Image 1 (cartoon, one colour):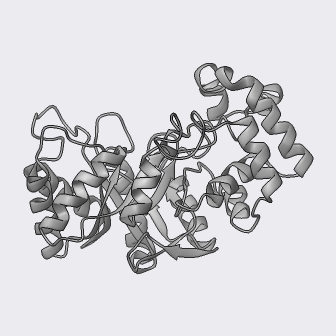
Image 2 (tube, rainbow, N blue to C red):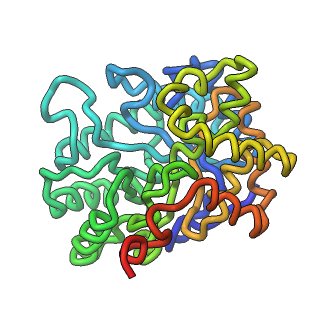
Amino acid sequence: MEYTRLGRIGLTVSRLGLGTMNFGWQIDEPAAHTVLDHAIAQGLNLIDTANMYGREDGDGLSERIIGTWLARTGNRNRTVLATKVYAPMSADPNDRGLSARNIITSCEASLRRLRTDRIDLFQMHHVDRTTPWEEIWQALETLTNHGKIVYAGSSNFAGWHLTRAQAVADRRHYLGLVSEQVKYNLLTRHAELEVLPAAAELGLGVLPYSPLHFGALSGALRKQRDRSPGRTLLHASDRVEPHRAALQRFEDLCADLGEEPTTVAIAWLLSRPEVTAPIIGPRTPEQLDLPVRAVTKPLPAEVLARLDEIFPPIGNGGPAPEAWAW
């Protein structure tokens, strides 16, 4: 495994992060623990979850599964533990969003479920357009000062949200954001317009989620032909069909390279200079192996150019405004 710093800060993370949205949803606790064991053995140290992962009723099941694993293995100090706050966790109207009350109470609840005394990266899962940044940062500063969180991050923010958030943090002499977790893959390149340039300017680590576009980039067409089980068939109509022609060209290119589509898709993300660590969500230990291979298999320039032909960037490519203007 290779490691890098998370943006401008001194924290070192693996070039792949383990996403745990499947824990409690698609795999049970013993299977999840096996995935966690394998991830640590492969050198992954970044574990990403959220308070709402696991079941639809917001019971924090993914966090609880990670908590029992940490208690069993004693691996807390070997991991960079990341979770999130924002999504509704009950019918209570105050049990959601980024109010100071919800940030603090959600952090306390996550700490209990995770069986730890601190969260290394506490991420805002979505922008809250109704709560002022002064209130948000006051709550996060309180948690930092009490040692309950170490760093603050964001997810699903626009570029101007990142800039606004950091400007308020700077006025308060607070470190502010250290990372942005964004949906980014060969089929979803909108982040290149403003989110990636803003993150680079602000010194934020970029953690792409859905790197395989819900399985569409994992050899979906071949799996359909082979009737292989899994997420690809589950989402075939909306994730695969709109991109069938491009995906066929992609799978043909991968076959010519002698590499699995999963490895190539992850290697492309790792080639992006702004990207710190794609967040992968395996359901079995074996599903970790192809992404891990990508870390040591950089793509040559001619392959990167072919991928741009198959999956063109938005507009003229590159950041705004050149992507749509001169």
